[in-house]
Image (tube, rainbow, N blue to C red; front, side):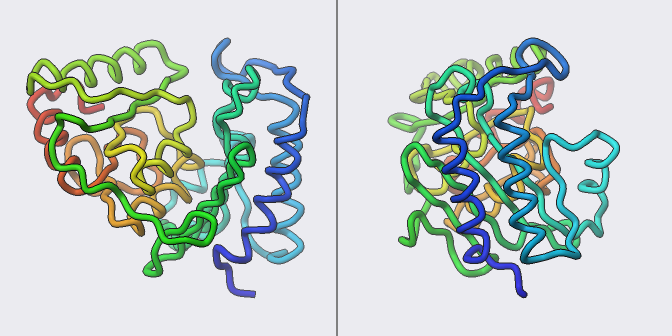
Length: 268
């Protein structure tokens, strides 16, 4: 069976229904007190994996919660398979903030070709297939047409790494220092959903230096298929394995990219 976003819809919805109803918020630390996994992450991962195996028994399926050794395969240029984020926004989930999502991307030779993201709290389903546009609940979505920093909405993200988070905040403050304009600032706590909000025009741009392939596998494609651009912070072409990126509509991306490149220490 061909992999398309339509085949992923019932799978992400099944995992999303579980997440929405789950009270399993007990957690164990991975690298530090801000980087943890809940029992619900593992159960959502297992739901996704089991449902995908039913349709695509021979496919490689890798998840955020797999071992680092297993996840290394995602970085190979020839990687073909599914990349899962069973609950993006785990900190939000643990605090019952209802700002988390399920993400599944399908990668062929290192490039995303389709994906689905489901936010069960808002009942919003984002889907994209390469060359066919991006959609929310079946309706086409597009990045914003905001051209000026004045009035723009620009998001960044938290990071489990304190020093990396400091760079995110310094980079954001540098927008004001360089331009004299401070855009409306958001930091919702789910990189996947932030990228979806860029794709549908809720945010004009997003910059971050701590993304992972499972954050990006579906969401990068959504932004691009909605008419947006995803680049590394230095302005070069991004791949779904890149951590330090800027995403947004073309005008905002050009403006912010020029600002950030004026301070090379912030480009990582």
